[in-house]
Figure 1 (spheres, rainbow, N blue to C red):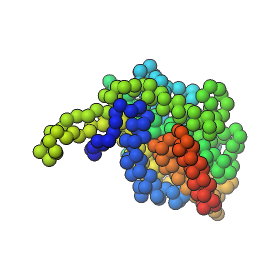
Figure 2: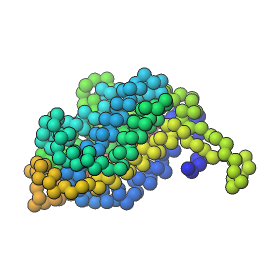
Figure 3: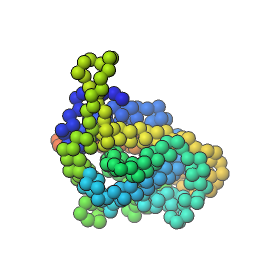
Length: 331
């Protein structure tokens, strides 16, 4: 494990996470798997399968958060009405498969996933369960931080593109509810500005939950060694900080697992064909999925960087310009 001598554990937890996860984030954002995904060479089945993997991750995470909802570190950010994503994923999967929500788990595509689960998905889910079943559930906040703030930062911008590609009713969030959030204090759809407020609320909640407890954030441990300068230390990033680093890697592996699938010939016969994704032209689907992948990777940049302050709003404008340029290139 690399040391981080400049990390100041007296800072608020949100700032510590922003700084300490940068290296892990960059390793994922520029990985070969992310590059392959950004080419847009994905079938509709592969995208739906990815949503299914995410559903298993969120189901495990949100079960753990509910179980430990009153824990002092987790309680300030626990708001299932606002954040919960598993039900939205379930709804979108059913919509894309054109089956009832009560039956999609028995669909051949999902059965194939369960019969041969990707190692990335299994490891991710098992880690969440291990934390939930341990005596210290505080690292769950790291999982919530990476996933929820990522969803709030980038997912909204592709809703219109998805609606066009799959002939979905965007106004009704048909098949797009995973990317939709409500306002903090009402049931109205959240605007981009409101989503920034939700992210600020979450960061403030993390800071409140961790407080000044350095052991919750990370701890310095003396590690004498003949190979080290006398009096030097190695930083053991415990609890939330190290877990956040690991979560980025879990998500990077999950992106890579999109392309690891069994023979889909039979499954493809079971899937409805979108009017705008027929076999005569893969262009619309590959373009949309290229954007999905690019924005998913961009989630990590936005989570790490944040949008607070004047510099944050400048980054936000730059992100909007990047997305416009990227979309124009893919079209």
